[in-house]
Figure (tube, rainbow, N blue to C red):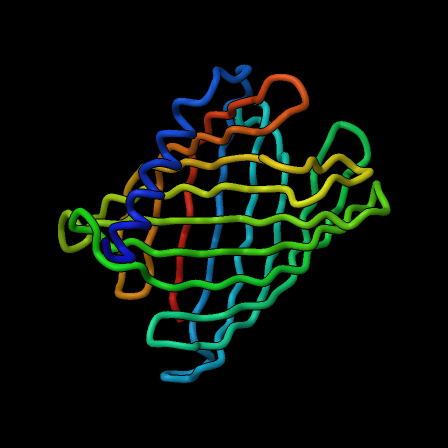
Length: 226
């Protein structure tokens, strides 16, 4: 079995696990928006730049819930593979005082091959989390697999899954073990050669001390390649 076929099976199994897990408590309907920019600082350079920014709206998309600004730099280690290092500032906009979180993150991105007529790619991210409402550092692993298949010259089908695993428990609430899972299905519109818009449904299952909670979200993201 090749690497692409193996990862495809893992991808499918993760989707099945996310959908077939024990019933979760009903959650919120949210709207998530994002802008992401990445690529070399100049053509054919090995030094890469990264930025993604997010605005996520909660309570049936009526109120701003979370904002994220996440810059980083990377180094190309292969034709389509790279290692990255960056910082993230996450703010939770609550009914009371907002809660800020600082993150240091490292990640590896690389392609896995062609599966079912589409390109399968990987992103493995390791985070160190520092919250303003606690003293502990939270360590978390995020495993992301994305599949995209062209349908026309400008439209592609897209599916991805990201699993979050807490590696320790903290005094501000991170749990050891399953943290959350994000499952996306939708489409991409390739507006220009290096600009695309992705929109679809995002199922976000959150690990909780009692029953897990599932949020049903509409996701809209704009991607620019340098």
